[in-house]
Length: 469
Image (cartoon, rainbow, N blue to C red; front, top):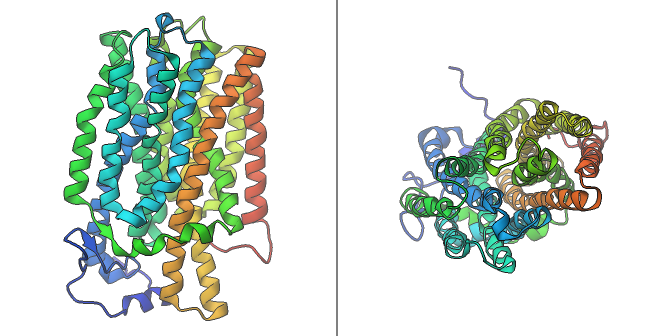
């Protein structure tokens, strides 16, 4: 096996004096004080093993968080005529968790720096008990719609988990592996969406639509197990304590808002379609999907494909560049939306499913490639600081990592708002025209904006272009 090439910056970091007994501890055995993932020797001897352990338990917690966040996309299929809620009301029940989850992603990002990655994973996992227990208590025929809206909002805490988990894992891995690591972390979390939908299908197909509270009951012991696992196996990095001001600083960077726009197109599409797909099938093809269980048989397929393919988007971006992969991806998403629109006009279910599978698959790939662009942007900026301004390599690279973590939180929050917009677009389209065609046209136009912006900012030949993004 050939020896990995060591860059000057890596060499500088590798020779940084450190106590031989690394990693050091701070405030207890779970704190790591000396963390140098760009040092090949440190990574091979200690870093890779510790990073992998934290990645595994981060994925478990985030996976359950996504399941709780998207639980209402399943629960609305249980809400029959006895609940007195129309299609527009059900879209609102799935939009509200998306909204609160988006809002919570910003403070959840801060929480990693404030409490530590391990500590916050424990807290954020236990917070998932609030919406699940709330559903068990209130969900039954005769419950007020306002009460359902309130309890649905509480599920948003599951959406916040993503931002803290991604920010934490970003700090553990070297730049050359960030696309893969972030893709695995996010993809494993995203699989929580089809998983809760599969469990919901199992409940519908076995004991029937009269027992929706069985779904959250199943998740309560899993939540407790995830919190215990994080407490035993995960670590806190002391360097994350220096990230508190990074979000304010990175908000002034134009790339923050460009990446956030692109992430609305990828993750916003993924989570929005995941929440809405079952309802859209029942409304758009009411003659075929006359019962919730019939729609549930197909609901999980798209989110499952999008989740499984996300790590490959990050891996492709590691090899080809995040901007190139994202550009092609947005073109493919626009084509997928065109196929869905054509299928809707033709009332062709097979073509409709092909179009939606395209949208799920390419939104998953794009999630990985856009997130890979984040550390690449700040790595490129750090390189310019070092070569042109004579900045200290270790200081500049550490700052780039803090800024990347902050942007992951901001982009994750704004991208999740895209899920709200998808649900609201469907709701308004059905209210105004009795079909979703207007929403599909809006999606096509937005994806066109995204691939144009990607080309203009990151691929267009220009003196300001950042290399390696």
